[in-house]
Image (cartoon, rainbow, N blue to C red; front, side):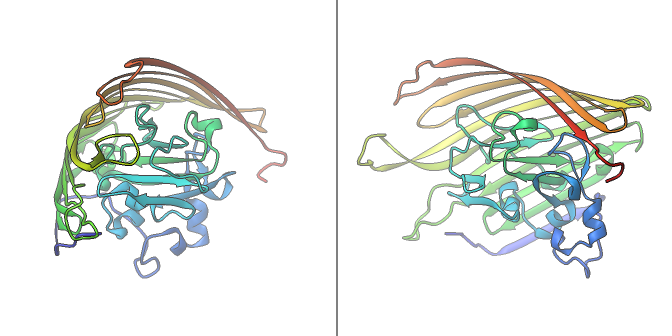
Amino acid sequence: MTRLNGVAALLLAAASGVCGEDPANNPDGSLSGLSLEELTNLTVSSVSRREQQLSRVAAAAYIITEEEIRRSGLTSIPALLRRVPGLTVARLDANKWVVGSRGFNGRFNNKMLVLIDGRSVYNNEYSGVYWDQNDVMIEDVERIEVIRGPGATMGGANAVNGVINIITKKAKATRGGLMTARAGGDERGAGALRYGAGDGERLNYRGYVKYFDRWSLLAADGSSANDGGRALRAGGRLDWQSGPRDLFSFSGDGYRGRSSQSVNETFQTPLATMINDTARFSGGFAMGRWERTLKASDIAIQTYYNDERRSEWVASGVMRTLDFDFQQHFNWKDRHDVIWGAGYRWMHDRLSGSPPPFDPSSRTDHLFSAFLQDDISLAPDR
């Protein structure tokens, strides 16, 4: 059901932060092509909320590296996740994906936590992730960390069967200009513009704009499946090193788009005639993070505000989220590596539409969380 319309790609780059291994030694950029030394040097932060060597984490973790992303040629996060062993990724249509692990999967997957730079993109109304409206500029992704299995101890709500953390590059790694354009395959046309500047040390920033327009897939009879979509997104990031101890990061973006779909005109069985519908969505977020490094510990405080709006045949909804997160990491008596933290999340949503009626049509939830982990060394350096 994939529509191929010829492939033509144009890539103009004034500057980019791509670096990797010798192509002859690692032709696809995947972990299987890395040496044992390179594998042990890979770090992951999603397991224990601190940097750890991949070889030492107590979890089934996998990293999609920047080099693997570049060499894959893929342009969407769900397509990249198909490269992760043990992760089940299915495409329902041109704009809907389901992602799960450990045999648990479905369109309304509320047991998989998906983060972008530590910001949850789970939607309470949908009971899952809207992959068509949660997008990033793929050239800005530093790595994608995937944990298969329970991660709720540190990740919190929804991290029952796994955690996917999409980590973007720091602003100083994206200085200069970048322009991309492509067409063909699933995309009628797509492109992005990014510009970054700064002194490379204390203050760095970037801004970008991204657009895509995807074809509809083809049904079995050769007709259009009415599932194409388009979206425009713009945003940026600023990193400020105010001193030897303090790092401030600010990021945000806004987006607007629409996705075509075919839905049943009634929820009763047998199913009635399918009708063509267009889901329209818009929103944005703003996030700030402060990190302070002390002699024997480090502290991080993060907060973000997220606003999502989506309107389709079955319902129209507005969801707002405000989140605060605090954590501290320190060593105690040489043997204990302790990390603890607490968080609060305010979620408000409002639904309208018929059928069916929604009761209540508006709801506000408050989520409190806390965690504590102590890594105890029984033998030094062992």
